[in-house]
Image 1 (cartoon, rainbow, N blue to C red):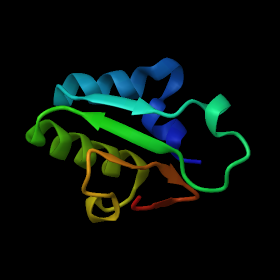
Image 2 (image 1 turned 30 degrees about the vertical axis):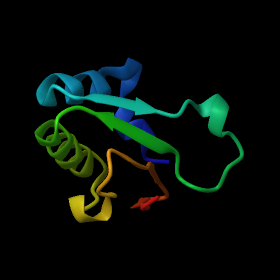
Image 3 (image 1 turned 90 degrees about the vertical axis):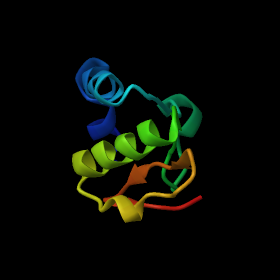
Length: 86
């Protein structure tokens, strides 16, 4: 599960991503997603430019091409080394 790479220790990576982009990242909590095989959804909020920047930064963090992420503001999270479109 690569969501931990996006969150970081104590949320430090998410805070860095939000600070660098000006956008907001919300990841479905573990407790709400336990036992599911599909990737956890990640919601991005911000201007179109902030969303593009957030996707680029997230893609770099998890080692997935930005094209592998969905194009909407809400896309399926990353698990098992892949990103899935909703």
